[in-house]
Amino acid sequence: MPLVTTKDMFEKAYKGGYAIGAFNVNNMEIVQGITEAAKDLNAPLILQVSKGARSYANHTYLIKLVEAAVAETGLPIALHLDHGDSFDICKSCIDGGFTSVMIDASSKSLEDNIAVTRKVVEYAHDHGVVVEAELGTLAGIEDEVNVSAEDSSYTRPEDVQEFVERTGCDSLAIAIGTSHGAYKFKPGTDPKLRFDILEEVERRLPGFPIVLHGSSSVPQEFVKIVNENGGNMPGAIGVPEDQLRKAASMAVCKINIDSDLRLAMTATIRQYFNEHPDHFDPRQYLKPARAAIKDMVAHKLVNVLGCDGKA
Ligand code: G3H
Ligand code: 13P
Ligand code: ZN
Image (cartoon, rainbow, N blue to C red; front, side, top):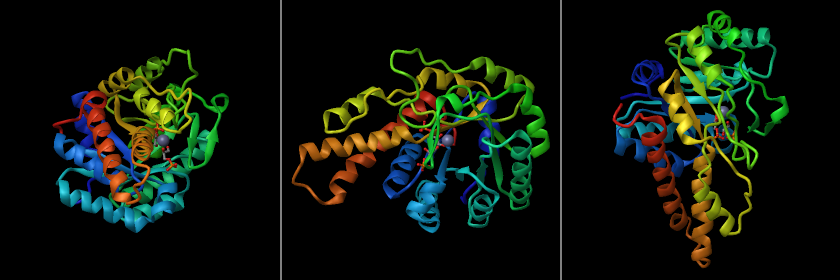
């Protein structure tokens, strides 16, 4: 099976009350950990590549790794550009074999966001590629751009219909309180997503797939392992998994997870070196790190996304 777009996945996910996991990939072990879990659980997948991943690992290497995952698993897999910040990067990924791109012009004015999104949609659709756009701004760090909590803003439901009609985008990322990175909420506060906004967006765009970024849950057992093995991540807090599961049962069809994979990998490697200070063969510590990613993804597929068995 070749790489697929997200069209069929989202239609089934919307009707079935579940979501597809969109996991960020940067190297072979991450691709393998994610796809081995999806294969075992027969789950559809979105593998996504950021601008930073492309400059770290190189476009061609990433494409070839994802093609290898398709060949190894036989699963429906979409290859998606995460947070494309210009027409040019979207075009480069469309020309280079991606089946889905995100144009993230959410920091621009509504009119400028509509204009660049429309331009990407026209080019993408001419090439059989689907487009995710974003309205509203998430806090946190992505590709070295740091948006403070004060500068973040929830999506205004009154804008979504006009935005989707005028751009022709295929899915829409909205801001309802999630944020990028491992420090999403202040310690001691009660993390709550704005389900009222999601419900209103759903009412105004019936049947239209919604995307949630910044959806890592930052499991405390991994933060503890990091902190007990020479790391320093006090106050790392994520989105409660039951709230993500609820969102997946609503109009949310794609949930983005990156930080939890980073945390699983880093905690495992830190612990490994503490226990084996004399080891220096990278395969020795990358093997348990890859297994930790696999376990984390399997947990998400079953308990957060509900997409196991849906490939
Ligand atoms: O939303 C951002 C993703 O976690 C990707 O992060 O830009 O550091 O690769 P990155
Ligand atoms: P996290 O930082 O919560 O994993 O979010 C990842 C993301 O939104 C990628 O686009
Ligand atoms: Zn994101």
